Length: 295
Image (cartoon, rainbow, N blue to C red; front, top):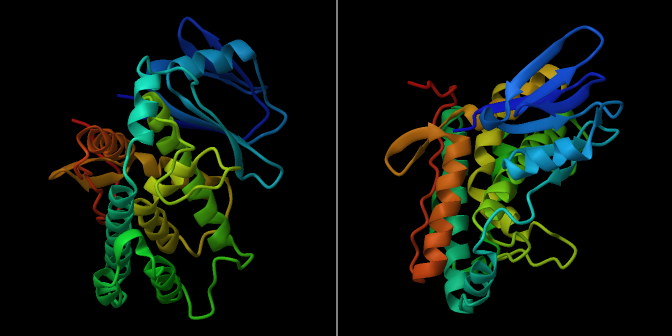
């Protein structure tokens, strides 16, 4: 199972040889088996990578993130035809009934708020969201999610904190969410799903509506890491922490796995849900963050 998440922060030549990814700069050269690579973030805009290398990484289901001038992920590389069953999956996605779609979104919002509440408790704050979980209705038509988010972020950080504020905390949150979003989008494509066909999100200009739906239950993992490192400057070391979040422990299906693998299980359960027309979603449960230990 792929577990490496690589970060390219300096001017680097990136290439493939004998199924190995080579990173070479003026000081050193490193190589990694492509089969072990989960994702690679290319932050330095002076780096160069060939189309062959990009194509090889896509075929091997490696998520490639390209950053902008603000050092935030601005583009993802995803395989286009990674699943032979894509036409069949398209029909399954479009056959989902509207009432079932609304029920699934209600369930996702409830589990998101549950994980937000757990995040507050793990941060030794008062869990204040229990009552809101009970108020989530079909399709969350009263927008309890937004109410919970406002209360949650003010309780987690500070009373005057907003997600629109220009600060290191929001930069770190956005960076972490981008990493999760890319990992989810990669898994959606790998399972033949079209990531622009969402449950709740339906922006015609957004190619990742479904990823933006499914990410919701994973966001509190980023929130917890950012809270625990809120005194750190938003620098390369911090970004590496956020990138390696994919290798932290997560509880799902009564077991403990990496967040990266939990995303795969969650997407698989979404596919099973679409096929069976029964809610079989396997949700991640937020626990205290620690790096997964491989046996």
